[in-house]
Length: 251
Ligand SMILES: Nc1ncnc2c1ncn2[C@@H]1O[C@H](COP(=O)(O)OP(=O)(O)O)[C@@H](O)[C@H]1O
Ligand SMILES: [Mg+2]
Image (cartoon, rainbow, N blue to C red; front, side, top):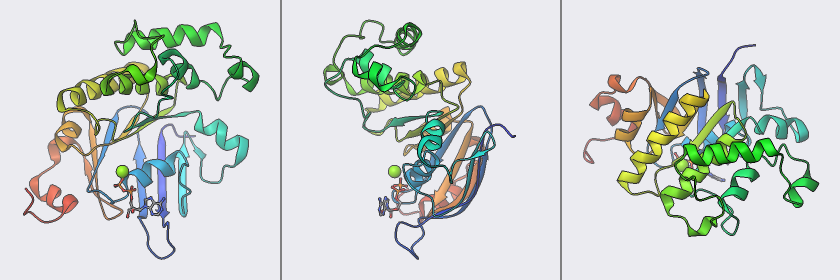
């Protein structure tokens, strides 16, 4: 059984005959942060959503620590999904719940339903939630409602929630695109530092090439559903950006 994530011949067509992902094959080490860059509509979100099966792949396999996720259904799929944390552009917090309740909901897959309904969570989950709130710089915010937070604070909660489940892999889809430039840098700094400390590999879709280069050890460039660049940030040359984003007139 090989550790990490291995994507083999992945394809996706929402409409038959119009592939959005074409035969993607990629291997990810069990450590480190990988950025996926590319123009809008090129399939970055589709790729990430195929990995956690929010989108059904049309073909290929996705092996996480040796287990193919593609054929999984029902309970087996839910179990596998618990191992994948997700951070969203629009945070996806439950607005009317407290920060603490949002964090604990990251453990919902583990807590029996009746306990979740009664909002009775195990001591160790509550201790972990407080430790994570501390780690993301919000130690005094446990009882604040999510809708009272700024965007940057919300994304910090989003990161803490994704880490609550001790994921084997963390996926982030444009986690900084709704934030101002300075907060975007702070959130990327936090995301990369915490996941390094916890030993969680990260795949992050990111619009901002400079952020990708600054924070990610590996950059994958996509164009029209295909991988056209894969390497360390220092290997990206202007011609690669032309390949990824097309044309030169925009630069
Ligand atoms: N649920 C869907 N149904 C049909 N087409 C979709 C759906 N989601 C995305 N697409 C299409 O797939 C292509 C890739 O989209 P997406 O993965 O969101 O790209 P990106 O994240 O790189 O902007 C786009 O042409 C988009 O319109
Ligand atoms: Mg997208």
